[in-house]
Length: 97
Image 1 (cartoon, rainbow, N blue to C red):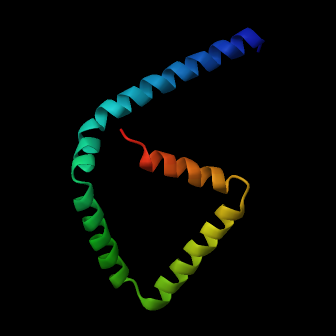
Image 2: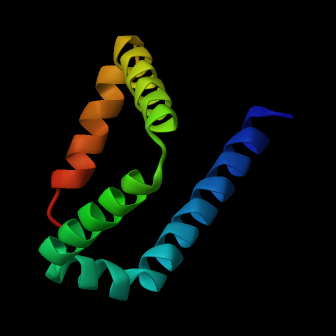
């Protein structure tokens, strides 16, 4: 494959990605607006749901899941990409849409 063909393939893929992103944004607009307007209700409902599910998990399994989550987060934060991933997630969560 020549350089020109590679560039064309990349440009086609970028255009396709952009079209799909626009389509996804148009499909999820109503949901994003609802979540933006009722952010506190979603937070409280999510906390209530998480607490309910956590209450259903047996102690031993809950301790194992917690230990696994902490181990995975430690590995992530120690990795070279960990800080950049956390910063990227923070920027996405705090940006104003």
